[in-house]
Length: 361
Image (tube, rainbow, N blue to C red; front, side, top):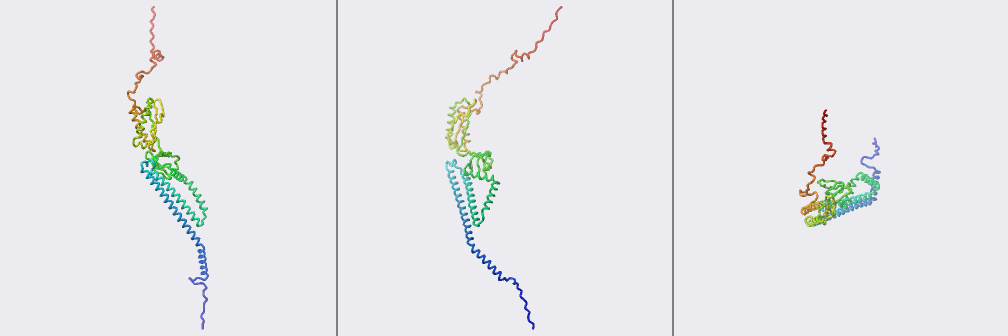
């Protein structure tokens, strides 16, 4: 009788079956993870809620500030339009100028507010994650200095535009002399100002390049006229005629609105042998001085023609006033007119010598 032979079993586990030791290790790791989560979940929750609160406050604050600035700008524009509709609206305010100025200021304020609010919120969020902000701030400072040196012209233009708008140095519709160009302001920007020249050309002037501004449209303007007459004219009569012209001009339309003061005679500006100059001035609306000067010259010329006063260089000399020259028919003096002058004696022919007759024997 033969007995069956039993082979020894392979101690290696079969695929798909785990050893008791690996199960215990996995269970330990899961327990450690659960304990770590249980220990830190409150910190995570606090950090998440803090971040959400920071974002919510920043977004709400940004929306509130931008809406407040927008309403303020709209109110400024409505007040400008209301004033413009009155009788003196054109003298007091320019709606387009006020609109562009308020929009530029509002854009700057909104951008600054958004940058400050969102930048502060970003730094607070990184602080909530316990990120060291010192290297970041140092790097941002170095980058800001590098950008400032590289784009210094752009920064200069932007800052100059901001201060020009805030100080209301000029606006749309003003006639200005910017040094590099002159003309009427078409558009005011934070970087570039557009001017329309006398010939219709458009000048794009960088705000940083403007070193001085001469605004010809703020306050009032002066119309100055120089009347050149003969020195033999009666000054009292001339004064009376010009004064009457000024009074008539102040009563006529539309000059009565453009004149902001009486026409004044300052006196003699220049006295020469052949002429004298009378200076006449008047205070006018901004930008209306040239038209008032032309009308003054027109009326003064007509009044002088009626009174028989001739403006020097204005009328040609008439035939009655011309005096004949007494030396026109006289011959030019000559050295040959005198018979004893050296020239006459030199030009006199030599008389022939008489012939001698021989003596008779």
